[in-house]
Image (cartoon, rainbow, N blue to C red; front, side, top):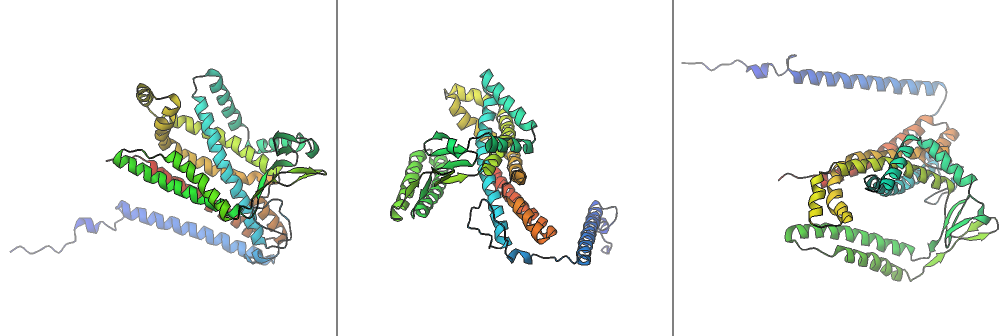
Length: 395
């Protein structure tokens, strides 16, 4: 009779053995986490001890105190009587405003320049290449100083302001534009937002419908009708109370309309022109990655060159373009912190004023780090989600 073996299998005996790579990996990771935790504990404890020794208060209680300083530009209501927390929120919104607008404009301009670099026209391709090389190799900070000096020192005063279009004035006080005034503004914006959501949902439905049935839905005409009809319905629901406020010269400055400050204009211009050069190279490399056979097959069908690029090449190039484009979007957001050099009240500028008044330097730096980290991770999450949506799915 054969007795059953009571010995432990060799695989189980070696599971927690030093010769097992998994065991060594777990041990090394535990040691690394312990070392990092020890370093962080040392830094925090030493910092708190030094602050206590110098009678410097810590914590974020200062955020509720009155700020006492003005901010030149604000997307929301703000007065010096508001709290430091409100002031920091205004600075964050200013950063997000220039970043979002910069991302959109840099994407459009960079795409056009990237396509121009591949043009068969010798002059167009060489001008685009020169633009890319100049903008990429001149530091962004110098470009910001250049554009700010051009706007504030070389532009005429309000009385001699340039008027490229009726009601649009460009001077050393910034750019003046007409604005809409009235109680129906909120209704119109609500109708526009609803129209955009409906168009996006309808585009998704139209793609699925075409894939299943082969029938093409007239999305363009329907989208145009929605974008026109819903804001018009909002205007009527708001009592049709809407008027155009045109800027006009009154004394030594303009009144009415909306103002794009020289600081915001110079910062936006510098960020867009600098980042668009990198975006152009990303777009050019993405188009180059598409096989030549795709061009030849589309040409064989008799499609116009512009339609081939829009319907055949760019959709395939997106799979190559999106990952490096994420880095450019992150760069334009983080590079906006250079606004402090030309006086634009972004997050860094407002927090610098706050910590100079309160002495809460560590807390201020932590706020800046947390804000940029949150924005950057949000951009990364969105771009990664979009990259997964356009990725090829093997059947």
